[in-house]
Length: 367
Image 1 (cartoon, rainbow, N blue to C red):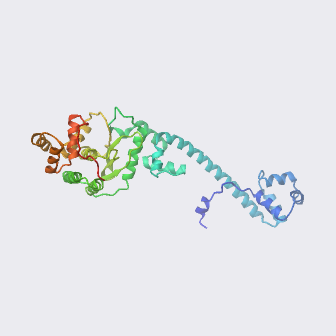
Image 2 (image 1 turned 90 degrees about the vertical axis):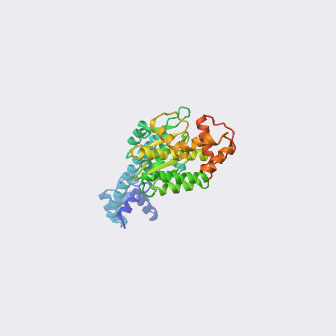
Image 3 (image 1 turned 30 degrees about the horizontal axis):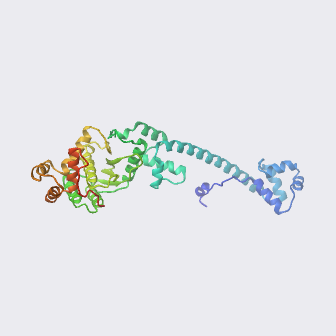
């Protein structure tokens, strides 16, 4: 028998050899009082053995061997196993109590509900603690608490002035994305291929058919990991860009299923990859919606997205040659230069700071 597997078998409750002695006497129809007299011990002493209050000693084991013809070694081995099982059960209970206490702490710092919904967690506390450490890439709970307290991963994080953002959920979402990205394999990344990638993406976005699937395929073809993860509660995040192993990665939530929002988010994160992360792989950019942050990296990524979705040259053509700007003229411009009309309308909304302009242009993202 494999001894390593034998050690893993632990009874729910340790069985005292007195239980076996009682069964043996019952089967043989021997009264405890009569048996006590036979082995020359007090009935109360024998009763305490049977109830597990006293151990079976070597002297008693020899008496049992002579009277019941069951070897003394058997009784002593049974007693030893009982002591071992009792010690292991005690150790297991201590570990369980420690795990429960750790889990109580973890639930304050980790969005357990969402990780359970994503099937990362099960009903076993100890295995859940190990999974949390794996997802958050920490060795112990102290590191987890310090990570959240410091919020060190959010050095480049657009903070919303208007929305209620749950920092614990936000970190949990980003760590889950990073964990998912570890298992994704894509082609080798070459930053010199970014202009060609942008051109291909504009074509996919213009057609707006199976767009998410095709964008994912293009990004992976050019060596960029792509993850879609639904946002957690109070985490109005649109996109996230970071370095994962040997490749850059982009994560989005599809919080708004609009082609203009989707396209701008993808190009914004590509801006971070092209301008920032490619030069410093420790950088991470978490794009939370409705933020008023004038940080240089965010502005640079915004400008990158704007200019690569519609170049300034083409924007000037729109302004000069397609007046007045109506749905009809926007569509004519879009068809001429192969730019999705919702992208044009979205930029008009943004530059005029007026998102209530009347239009029948379809903004829906066609998955």
